[in-house]
Image (cartoon, rainbow, N blue to C red; front, side, top):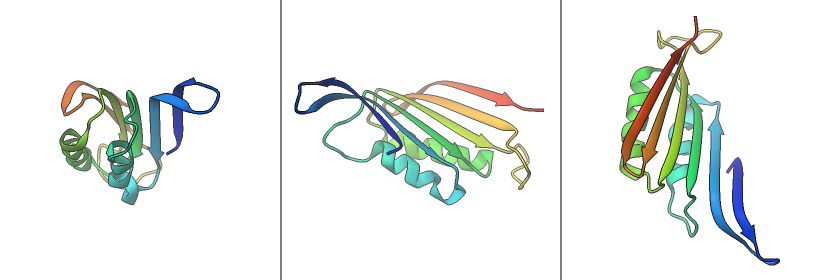
Length: 114
């Protein structure tokens, strides 16, 4: 877990998991990042953000399918950085963002860097 934001503290315990943020720069750990966001746990966050570097648009689509099958969170933003060619290059030239409400994609955005 890269970052958590808790809502209230009663002097002894934190309550209301507001945000869970995971980010991953290594390609082989993209699915592991989703697993961390959507795993079964005692406290389910109200919001989640996952930011990942992904090898190709095809892999982005695979990960979105996995997310739709496993997401239990009401407000999840997934951000995937990738290359349009799918080949190794010095920088990512595409960003794909998906907003999920539990198992549904409710909005998408795409940006290209030239």
